[in-house]
Image (cartoon, rainbow, N blue to C red; front, side, top):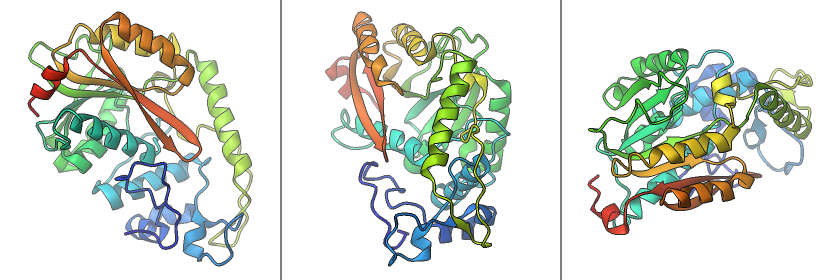
Length: 334
């Protein structure tokens, strides 16, 4: 169902269900706990717009973001009883869905333009986190199977709970602990494994201090750009103290060497499994890191490409690489 009169977000992928914004009437109907976070935004909106069109949430409030995610997963992806522990990363679903859709297009490019669907398409999610979001979206949208890996046992325990509450995931999503944080694919990819793709949202920062400062800047910008508004109960929203609106544990937010160090390690390790994965991929948050990533990929002899994405004012991208020739890519059996 498309919200009435909402402006289409043309920067999102054409198949992204969130191109027309959020239908808060439907979302709160499916997930009533969201309702207390919804308010009417009268700032810079056409006075002729309906109250429903003006509805939003405070995206600097982590509880509001999590409630919105729950409602979106129930409404659009047939997921029940999704939850994450306090302080774990709560991802923005439209952006994560974009990664899945653009990845599907990449797979189609070597499959006669047809997006491969079904359980035979196997993805490896590096750093699945507590939210299990990529396996959820990839399975719901395209029926793909996943192995989710992480170095955090508590994150995997929560993923296990999510899978337990959603039986359709039980047959298609498995979890594996990376017992040695120094490695990414070692101990995970066995000689018998054959993955269609890897997917990853690497840690952005190189230290806890950098992670804290980065998140405070992000949330401060959100609070400054969000006008005071009236809630459904008629009370004024208070100014929000900057906090981690999308959460994040240490392993989710930072690692030694930061994003660039993590991705370089991933590239060097991937070269040890050239015929066991069709496409290795990873998000790259910092554009300044691209040239070094390209040099590393060239060093190991990988064919690579960059897929640009955009969500609102934010530009994002993922880099994809393969060690297979064009003929080998086309011969891959989905």
